[in-house]
Image 1 (tube, rainbow, N blue to C red):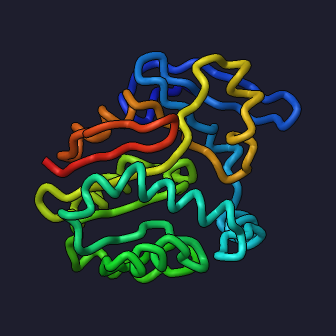
Image 2 (cartoon, helix red, strand yellow):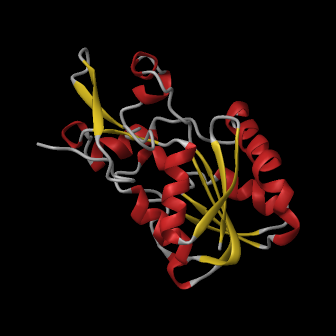
Length: 215
């Protein structure tokens, strides 16, 4: 079977985790990396995996991650933002509660824990998605859907780790070992995705934050 990049349709090379018998594909052009479909876990296993996470206010590191994400990614645009969608909020929707305390009007969505898609009938000044896109099998279609829910000049701000460029480093990388992490994006792959849906990349921060604005 011939494979091509899900983002730009360019050729890919394979990387094999022999121990776990998992194959990944890396795009030769945009650098996007994704897990072979034969290794994807079921929805049942995925949900059970998420339920094991201590993603609550009781976890100081988890809360600190969101505070830093807000300061670095959102604070520069806060004066332009009133309404927010936290997409992929998790069971306790911690970040949405942080945003509400800061004075924003916030809706939430999560595939397993808050599945009502109320955002489909609304528009937002900001959509956030923290540690979500690495879980998506078809990220481009989700990006298109989120863009449709943004107000004109609205912001979409994502958090997800950019992958190492070296294959050996990637296979040794802690972040890819999560069984639900299946898609890994580079700044270039995000730029291509953005252009296709009517977004522009304003900036990338560190190795894990991307700020988009609707054109």
